[in-house]
Length: 75
Image 1 (cartoon, helix red, strand yellow):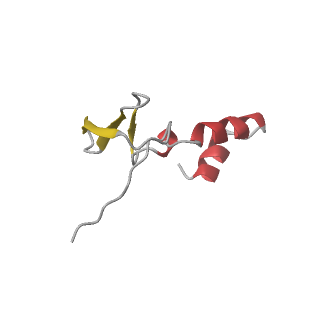
Image 2 (spheres, rainbow, N blue to C red):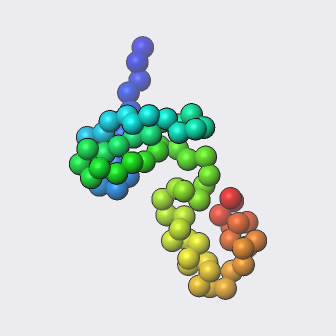
């Protein structure tokens, strides 16, 4: 019994992908043949996930401290 999951590029939403080796912690790297960018499906550190940078910037502009930001984002 096989299960398949269709993977899309996080940047351009294309499904024209190739495996491109592994990171040091054993997670699979992928490269998009359309936009030539690399990405991972799961990250070890939450800060690398998409959308986190925008949340941190927004909280900083609203005078949240480092501890507040970490507590709210569960990092």
